[in-house]
Amino acid sequence: MSILATEFTDRRGRAAALAKQQGLRGLLVVSRGGGTLDRYGDVLYLANFYSSFPFIPDLPGSWTGRAHAFLVLTGEAEPHLVIDCPNDGRIALSPAEIERSDLVVESVIGALGRMGLDRGRVGLVGSDVLTVATFRALQAALPDVSFEEAGPILAELRAVKSPAEIVALRRASQLGSRMIDTMMAAAVPGASHGDVVAAGLQVLTPAKGVLYNSFMASGRGGDAPQYIRSNFPTWASDARLESGQWFRIGISGALEGYMFDLSRSKPIGPTTNRQIELFEHAIECVETGMAAVRPGVSAEQVAAAGLGRQKALGYDMTGVFSGLGHGLGLGWDSPWLAPGDRTTIRPGMVLCFERTILKDGFLGDFEETVLVTEDGAEKITDARIRSW
Image (tube, rainbow, N blue to C red; front, top):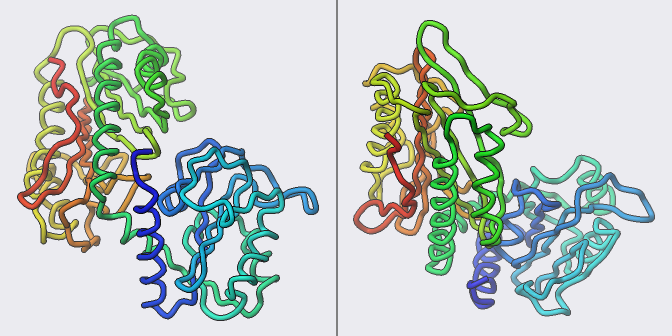
């Protein structure tokens, strides 16, 4: 990665300092890899490590905690990273601070004891990726430890991106933009959803990008509405695109761990006025939200602008996602552009704006990514907006 080791050191120092401010004796940070892109970000953020081994149930005495990585962090001692697969040379720690183990849980318990975190209040970051069995094993082995939720510490640190992270997110958004341009061009009469994804992978894979998901749907509006999609995989429909349909695609993936996330809609064959209306209104909702971005406003104020525009245009406030968007980094970061999130928007945040609107069987879908600057928002995705 282009991020220097000194930046990882600084991140760990800030995390330990925030933990100390909250009266915590240290942090136990856990992430899960195993080939997924769901919850790997916290350990990658602090140590530049991703576990490639898949999740498997524990076999006591042979292996525990596979697919997980644990970083033990205090302000007084050197950090200790427990991993379940070999170091590929990119971990931002010294070899003495890294322990590879098949018995990951047992090694973590040992590290907590050696570092003086076998009693008192210890912050737990990543509780959502721990199995109940793993957490119970930690509690049983460390009865004098009070594990306390500390996820907000990393959420706060990850929300504002460093200059190096912004470079990485620009690269990722550029790759995602080229990928979706290629996919939209491949969405023609006779093509399947799978054909469209295959075209995009020809762009993504050589660039060393990873696909997280590709949300796809096609259909017709009007008196006999038609809606074609598949949950798993999302491109599994056997139906072929037909002239007169609408088509939408949303893609997300990662380059060097940093995410891209964007969506587009288009007509298949001739365009109708009703199709254009839905496509344009989705764009209008997103662009209204983007125009509301400026340092000092809250996330929910930004959301209110875009969602308010949707309501004013006469659409139901329903859809696949009730918010207007979210932060973006090593996953879906803070803040959430939704009612109830009062996080202050700050320069250096990277935000995704998304809106899917539906009416009378027609659908419009649009998503862009912006960097928050001192003056407002700078768009960092540059895929073609209109295919009509």
